[in-house]
Image (tube, rainbow, N blue to C red; front, side, top):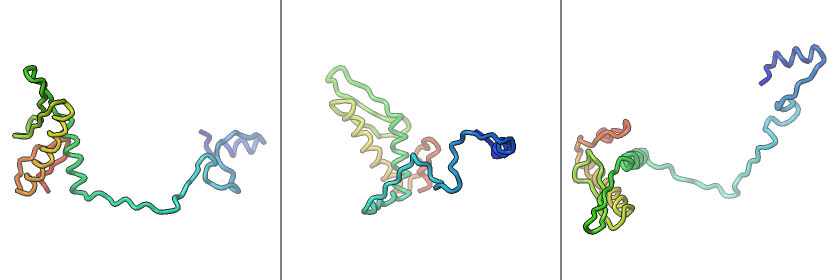
Length: 130
């Protein structure tokens, strides 16, 4: 990168430097940037903060899910440690994880509604304050 003082020194000597800076009489936007504006504005409603926090919490908790396949009937079991009575089962690993996530979200909702203050803190997300 060339400093403006370096440019001034070069100009005093009568030399020029290759820069990617626009000239002052040119538009300041680089030529490689193309802006496209939609003809119809699209409004995306923001997710309420409480739901966003719960969604982030559930996603982080699901990263801690453990799955086991039972050899007797080839069924799958999924659970998250530190979450009592939160588990899912299914015919496939994916099915057990989907059921686990559903149970986890319901469990979180019940805990918040009942004002239980024993929800585990995950990655510094504390739902006990809701």
